[in-house]
Image (cartoon, rainbow, N blue to C red; front, top):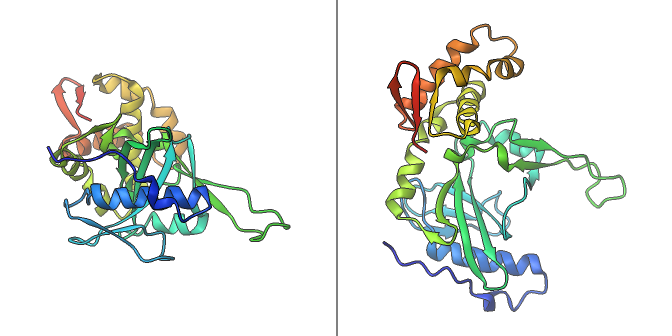
Length: 259
């Protein structure tokens, strides 16, 4: 087990007046020292100031990450960049992935750190915000929110969970099992896989049946109205998740969740 100090160095933020700036500097410093690339295990180095939604880059594979930090826990919706920019990222396999960090404000230590690959985001995860009012400095600008509860749990790769540091090998393996989604260029095809992951998660049980999954057929038909073979598509996606090692097939329409 690697040694990770969960304490944050508050002195790093002393030269800043803005609370937001203090938190950014302190959490970025901690992340650079203690985190690593969840794709290959390489070290992370901080990106250039004012670079495109980039906070860290892996020195080995050049994978990029954007860090978001908050006290206690993330709310259901996390504000992010311009809506148009985010939607463009969904189809760009080179887009930065996300790191989400939570910390205890009083004790100043990290409570959770998890990565979310960009390929776990689809149009149902990105919420368009209202344009800024005419009197705003950036009048008309349209931002977006990341709807956190639309991200399947399989897409949250934890480094630290409830103040417990997870083994590096565990982090990399959890990332590897869903890497096939990054290669899928079709947003619709990826969306099908994500929907089945959400359904499996919503069932709330480790063992489930194909019949239980079919109960969501009408919901998927509403999202994909031009698909006349919804059940066939559901079975196909269960096979995709089985081949990826996220499910096992127990026989006779029975499955077991492995994430």
